[in-house]
Image (cartoon, rainbow, N blue to C red):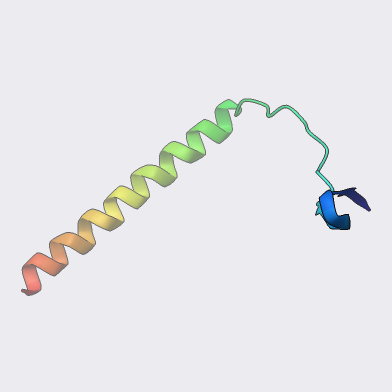
Length: 56
C-alpha cells in the first residue's frame, strides 16, 4: 500500500494507479458504426419531439 506520513503522524493513502497506455484511433468500421448510431439517435430524438408537439 502506498502512503506518506504528514506532520503530526497522519497517514495519507493513495490509490494504486492503473497502467497507462496510448489510445488507438478508431478504425474505418468503428467510424461507420459511430455515424450510423449518431444518425439513429438523431432520428429517434427528432421523432420523439415531433410526437410531443403533435400530442400537445
